[in-house]
Image 1 (cartoon, rainbow, N blue to C red):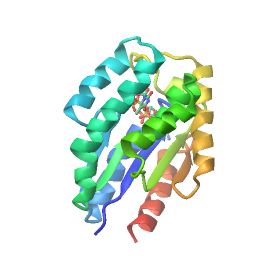
Image 2 (image 1 turned 90 degrees about the horizontal axis):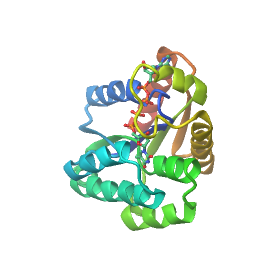
Image 3 (image 1 turned 45 degrees about the vertical axis):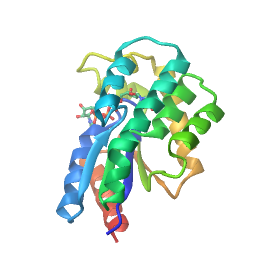
Image 4 (image 1 turned 180 degrees about the vertical axis):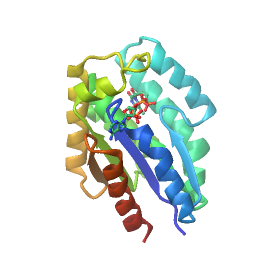
Amino acid sequence: MKGRFITFEGIDGAGKSTHIGWYVERLRALGREVVHTREPGGSALAESLRELLLQRPMPLASELLLVFAARQDHLEQRIRPALAAGKWVVCDRFTDSTYAYQGAGRGAPLERIAWLEAWVHGDLQPDRTYLFDLDPALAAQRRAAHAPDRFEAEDTAFFERVRQGYRRRAAADPERFRILGSDRSLEILRELLEEDIVSICK
Ligand code: ADP
Ligand code: TYD
């Protein structure tokens, strides 16, 4: 059986973490060997870089380079070996996050992101990406329970730019993306995910 690379995307508080564990268990129940991972992070070096990225103020260029430095290690240590062994990789965020946050959100030139993407993993792209799409004001209410990190502390205008950045990515690649309107109930979202699991497991 061939492995697949699946990513979960969306603004902070849109519902990725709520669904990803369930999704991984569904794939395992269907007999797939699954590696559940996340970005920034997923390998020892990348988890160290994650701490810096989420807590320490830094110039945008440093942020962009650190995101890709973490991704390079994560790909080498975990993602590529798992896919080569026929496993499925389910990753909470990947390069679409960089286009949305560092690009649309912070204003990094998209050509620069594309250049880094081509260098680090041009030949490897997700087979499926779920975009959890939610109004930023609602997402802010949903995540109000915990202390914000450096990204979560951004205002609604920032998250509106990030949301639109994601939507443009999804519109440019409708084969890969499935947009999930996250204002709907958990049950409905699960049904939509279940339907898609059935189709990609064929
Ligand atoms: P993310 O991982 O995208 O940042 P989470 O999965 O942590 O978001 O969800 C943020 C909060 O919203 C959590 O408290 C979660 O229980 C709640 N939540 C997630 N999905 C829904 C939903 N469809 N309806 C209502 N609340 C939700
Ligand atoms: P995450 O752990 O998914 O946060 P949450 O569970 O709160 O949604 O991601 C951490 C933060 O990292 C998130 O705010 C988005 C940011 N990020 C980027 O800015 N660029 C990237 O390329 C990635 C992968 C994440």
